[in-house]
Length: 190
Image 1 (cartoon, helix red, strand yellow):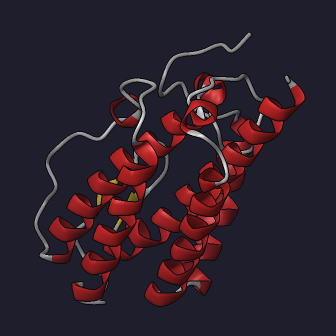
Image 2 (tube, one colour):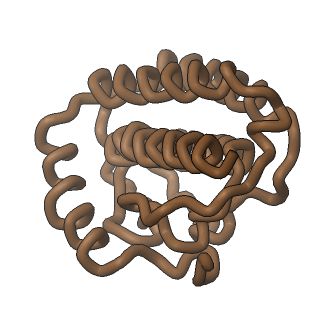
């Protein structure tokens, strides 16, 4: 049985690996455009995986095995719930990046629980496609300079606008793996 509440966090080892190794590596080796290209790649993979399934299949909630960087509470999502989470988080991150790019403080408190899906509902794939188009347009118009202003991630460091753009790739990659785990668990439960 899945335990925990939204925002309880990751196991200590995963948290430290992300905080002490993955985030510094991304900050060192990524550019604005590499992060964006990787984000678009992950989005294409997600869309291609989900388009092969019916709406009914995307609504089935299954419990998946522990997956790297997915907190325990989120292990019982449907595919549509993951997609809703990606849309909620992505639109929130767009607001953060826009504010930081203008060197304005983003005063809203961002929590993990606050970006969880509201319900297991239909129509999230079309919303995800619309969000990806919104982010592409947003990114194209974005000045590619690193802000001095930062906004703390609820679990990790205080990120500037560049870091939040790189986060979009990492976050989408992590949830693409969750999507694959849900698809696998769904097939195995048939």
